Length: 319
Image 1 (cartoon, one colour):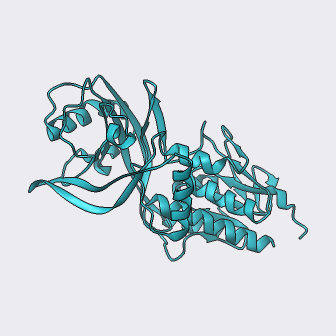
Image 2 (cartoon, rainbow, N blue to C red):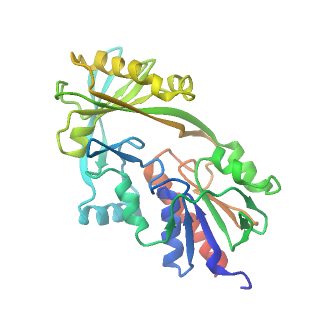
Image 3 (cartoon, one colour):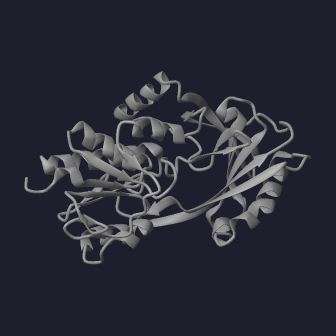
């Protein structure tokens, strides 16, 4: 080819972007990953509070795709992942009851550590803000062989030249809902054993996880995720939502003591709720690719598979 293959650029170092870069590297295609944040991980996000990590994005993941199961086994061999639970609680108008399901996996060092493990095989530049993707293709005016945008559609739309009608059409068709993740640290563990709980029909929270149980260290830490409707009213000042979420969790679990610390994280684009899902990814004639869990069910596995498949498609085109 007469195109410089060293200029394949992946924008976004969540699991979809990293999986795409890994696949390109395996195919012998040099790749650059650019991430606007300080760390890899995307919505597989973990932050440290008082010296321990807490997951503030994805709460867990499941694995059914054989190829993704193989990746999980690599994480397990590295001591990064553990089986957590196949049973959640559900709170609804009928009270509290068990909800069996697939095995949910957790990471003692936080889910971000799993993305970082994959990213160790590819070059990632953090704190690298990308401003534009144009026909050619090019990234911020630099010509490249292909570009993979691994991020929510509304964020990708801000980068795309409107002339790239195919990619723009795809991202504009995506729909996303917001959420707030609230980390609650209590003096002691005073709640009933529940691991994680779906909260149905509640105006404030829809998921609560026992992060001490999830992490395996027994810390008195809960992480609550809010409903989209509640989050939408607090996106401008998310920290102001903390007291309402804390009270909702205390009422739900019957906790007498207040939390010692409450931290709120805003996810404007937390979960895809609609858009084109005919394929696991998008790659147009201009060399602009799109990947993420919007191309399937909102799952970690879907995001990984989307990035993997886009990487393969780009590599095949450049061969």
